[in-house]
Length: 67
Image (cartoon, rainbow, N blue to C red; front, side, top):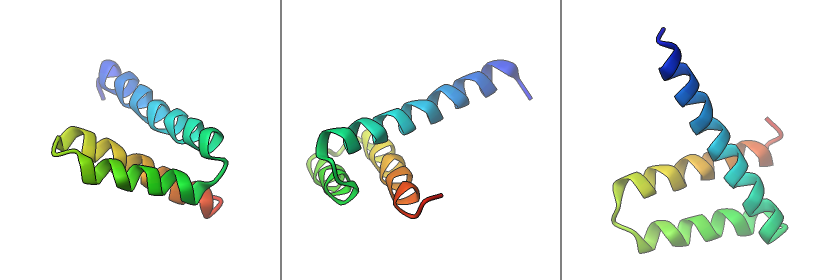
């Protein structure tokens, strides 16, 4: 597999995780962080931003389940 692709994919995964952690720190609640992201989904029509928010929501859900 292409090393540039692997590096980019890893950076993107790290970005999602770091943003999820920053939301947890900000809201001090996984549920509130996910609620915030659901609100952002309602306010944007940008498909890329929606995809990003959904990935972060999935990351937060995984964290909540201890995975």
